[in-house]
Amino acid sequence: MQFILFFFYLIILALIFYLLARICTHYFVESLEILAKKLKLSEDIAGATLMAFGGSTPELLIVIIALLHPGNHANFGAGAIVGSAIFNILVVIGAAAIIHTAQLSWKPVVRDVVFYVSAIIALFLVFQDGRVKWYEALFLVILYLVYLFALRTWQKFLPQKDKEILLDKLSDDVEKKQQQAIKSKNIFWQGLSLLDVLLGKIFKDLDKEPQYYRRVFFLSLFFIGLLTWALVETAIRLSLMLGIPDDFVALTVVAVGTSIPDLVSAMFVSRQGHGGMAIADALGSNIFDVLMGFGLPWLLFILITGRSLVVSTENLNGAVILLLATVAMIFLLLLLRHFKIGKTVGILLISCYGIYIIYTVLEILKIN
Image 1 (cartoon, rainbow, N blue to C red):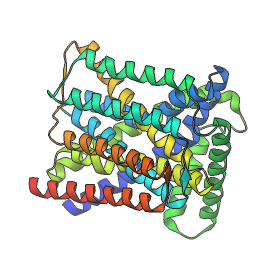
Image 2 (tube, helix red, strand yellow):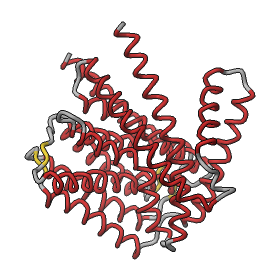
Image 3 (tube, rainbow, N blue to C red):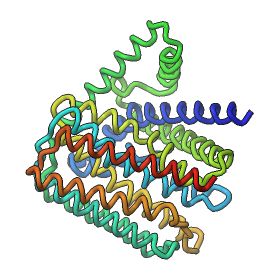
């Protein structure tokens, strides 16, 4: 009976991950792109604010829902963001490097690495006493605003218009595969295609009817919130059933599931010969996740409740240290290879993630 329940939870999680990915990338981000044009935001600022918010909304909501969930589940939200950051820095960058060797421009790399390392160190210091104060959360938010200011003064890796063209091509490829899946006899792919058809009935196609971007924006936000709540509930129940801390599930299963869209996008743009853009996006996304994904929900929670936030750092400190070590390793490798990253480095990064997963599983076995 327990095995059946375990399998059921995994199926539910897989469906939630798929729906979150489709709604975020195909509807929510498209509505934000139109909003950015309406607000006449520069490409860098739009990418680092609205687009980063669109791609990281599930992680952001996971932190908020975990904070509001009955019982002390603040660690779950923290684990999801830290685990997602580890996956992005090791697997997403690693996969992009394996697919296509990238020659990076050193200035934006240095800029993003400096801010990312600063964000990780700030997070590590916040975690030290296991209690988050309002001024610590505010500092994370302010640090992200400083990053936005830096974006206005330094050139990004790849012009945003080129990025939009590539992502449009990715969307077209996904649509073609879905149409092929409908015609195939594979039950699994037909099931996913039926979900896409259902989403098409709920949401307007902004490519054909861009005037409905407000409606798509709020509908997307509603369904992302609903799915994220279901994700948190299912993952917490899974951790209780297995008898392991919920932050272990967040650091691994939840983090990987919410990061799959980033991996697919990175592999696609790298295959098009733009691996540098994939690497830049991975770093930029992690900066947003660490600073705003933690800082904003924590600050709001503390201001509303009037009390500091207690976070158990037993399992998180090691993950944060690993995150800092991997960034330092990647930057050192880039320096040694004159900011050129290829297959060898990619295999090394993904191998590091494999070692991290094995270590995490061994820790879980010790608990049980």
